[in-house]
Each structure stands twice: as C-alpha cells, then as structure tokens.
Image (cartoon, rainbow, N blue to C red):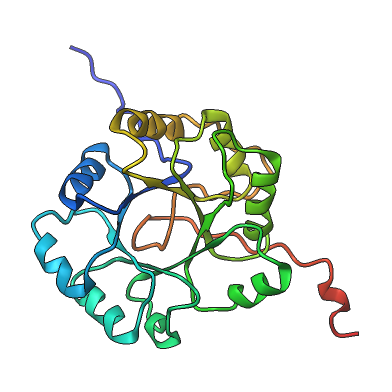
Length: 243
C-alpha cells in the first residue's frame, strides 16, 4: 500500500449559477447534485412563497430573481435566508439595495451605451448579469465585444446568462473577455450538458498573463471565496472630461 500526497482540488475558472423558473424542488436538487456554485429562483411568490420551499432549499448559496424589488420585500427575502438578490434597474427601489447582507445582482443587457454604463457602475451593486441580445449557438466577436465593453469599465463581478452550454473554446474566450461566471437556464440545459459544462470549466487552461480574470469563481466573498473583481479600465475620455 502506498501513500501519496492528495491532489489539490481544482478551482473553477468560472462560477456556475443555476437559474430555476419552474419545478423548484427538482431544479434545486439538480443544482446540488451537479455541485453548481449557487442557485437563483425566478417567479417566487414573494418572501412568503419561500416558506413552501424550505425543505428543498440547498446548503449552497441561493437567492431570487425578481422583476421588481421593494425595501420591504428585500428585507423579507433576506429574513428567509436569501444570499443573492437579483433584480432589474427600472423596478427596484434604491432602499431595497441599501444593504450588504446579500449579494446585489443587476440583470441588464450587454453592450450598454457608455454614459448609461458609467451611471450604473456607480450604484451599490455587486454583480452584473448580462443578457446578450440575439445570442445564437456560437458566440461571435460582436457578442464577446458587447460583454467586454461592460467588464472592462466596471468593478463589478460579471456573469453572463446562457440557455445553451458554451463550448470549451467559447468558455475560454468569455473568461478572457472578463466574465466571472455563467447563469445557466436549468430548463434549457439538461443534466448531461451541465455536467459536461462543469468539467469544461474545471479543465480551462490557465489564463495568459496580462489578461483580466479572477483566480476563482466569485460573486461576493461570502458566496464564492477568495479573489476580487478587477479595477475597471480607465476611459480614454476621462482626461478630457474636466476641460
């Protein structure tokens, strides 16, 4: 019988967050079985609706994806144990995000106009989830550019919403474009594809020096340990703003 040094567990280059919009119990069970990093529940009927899911809620970080969020509901969800609060810009009150007790996640489109992006970047947010309009099966340079335009200019963690598992090459390109993780649609991507996606994330080659990227998959430190988001790249126009 030989004794050897145990191999260190691989740290994923990208976080994987399961997005569940129906059949919550089955979706949460799948997230836990696959060992994804977190879960987001969409369409939950208010904080009270979470009480019905108590037995299904996983030990891993979880939260809710909402179309609107008030201060009262924000407190209610946190009281029920939410680690993540995901919401839109238009229907969320300022008071609802005046807390750091849960990760504050903004859903928005990639390719934002520069002035709009600057304004959003100053808000008390932790994470952007980017939707890429017109995304097809394969990522195009235009798709990647729309994501990089955001990731290079903000100091938030960047996740991208996907309804189909990206290829290994696309994963590498997304990471190099400043993406910290993926929000995967649990209704559109089956368990086999998700398992293959997780394996591909773990097998991503090391990032080349000089490119932005977190050493680990992170949302806030309390959810995905170690690392931090990169400083945003300076705007070329900033030197002229005060002239």
